Image (cartoon, rainbow, N blue to C red; front, side, top):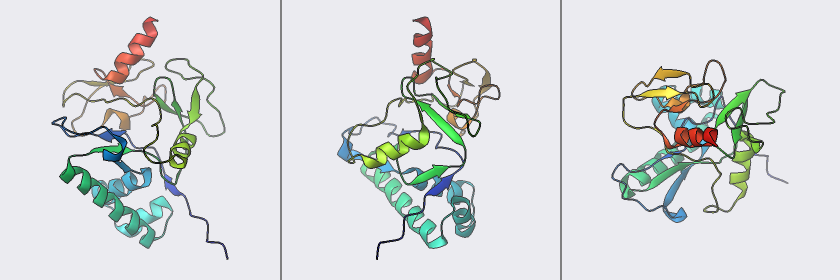
Length: 212
């Protein structure tokens, strides 16, 4: 008798950051020294600890049973604890998830955006490149790789303290950065593209692409 297929965990949107590094900068970037936090584990911490939902409420949001949510949540907290105590980098990648909206990622510039259901993204609205894939595919591709193999493209470190602005990498719409709220959690109201910090490496990369 074959095992029951594993149900995908449902997320309304991808994580707003790609990972974290120790503030001291004293950490190893080797694959084996990186703690990989899966998308569903990030979501579990977000729902239980940030939004302060009960585990039953959170499990319904992710379309899993409460015991399954408990296992995901416990795994997430152990990974975060390991990173904190052992001074390791956290990379938020992969997992067994599905999104309830159509999100895309440009493999050239790393921009993340969403389109209306049923429509495909042929070109990146930021850099104009055609190397655009559904974010669902990017997650699946990572999960199929041997852990520690190459990471997906478009990983940038953003954020510079508490001051400054969040900016749309396409239309340059700016909003004042709010402490504790990642710019990547905001969608431009005009372009449906995730915003970035104005002085981040990601935005500087976009500006350089425009000059060319």
